[in-house]
Length: 396
Image 1 (spheres, rainbow, N blue to C red):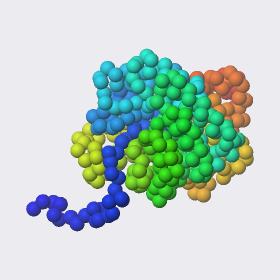
Image 2: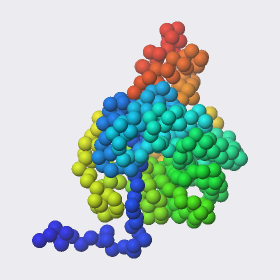
Image 3: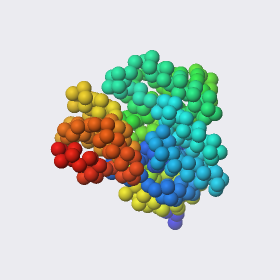
Image 4: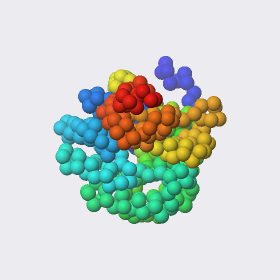
């Protein structure tokens, strides 16, 4: 007797609209967004190359190579990954993260010129009212910044992928205006983000449908819609499936769910579910490399702090605990912690020093910042203190 004859599958008893139609694309964020977890280290280039080959073996459509605007270490890693894709004639496509700023976009174009690999520029900017309030951004600032960034990427011959952070807590008018502006300026891929892990499946479905009906269809352009989610409420997989059911084409995810706070959408779980649901192309994809992929990322890896810091400086604990989290930590007896690591900016260093009453002179900040940028992990308190000049360390 066939095993399937012994199982009555309620999962198959649904209206046709409650199943992603496929083909479903997957974008792997393990080597960029996943590394923003304070508990992981930045893998070496050989480790990243091993993971890249496992992504290719699994049939993953694309990956985020990194954020080359972050510094020399990031540029070296992104360049090495890009060259590996070209040399081995891999099918996997590439994108790079970039803030909506020329200094982040330009390095992507330079790597394209060096390697010959086509790379999408995933330019991101915060969108929600809480983020705009914390940053002091006006609507005009967001629209003008969006227009400049997308047009600049196009002028460099890059394919713009436009990303709005915290879309799931953004008002409809701003969502519509930002995506419409990006599309009018040349973006042909847009990313809807549940940056703070706030969404429920119903919310994810409603938001994607809104973007399709109010932005994409009226534009008359062929636009790829991506969904990028986090796991704060344990709903990342459910939200991703809901987004696909609503019409999204691609899901962003990380191996073993690494990422900020409690992590990003789990790539391994997405692959398992798409395979079991019979969704193309995963219904026919060989996924026997899934275990080595998870093991490689686990071995190799061992918070958007700037906005949180700005919220702290407004002396508003609730704001600080909510601006980048869908689960306010103060409700559960916890607090936001700002660490210093290879993904950190100088604002992290300044905040760390201020919290401990250590004078934040330019020399002290630069010493810690340079050590963090050359490190493959989040610095411990002892490591930061070791970076201080002897006189400063004694005072602390």
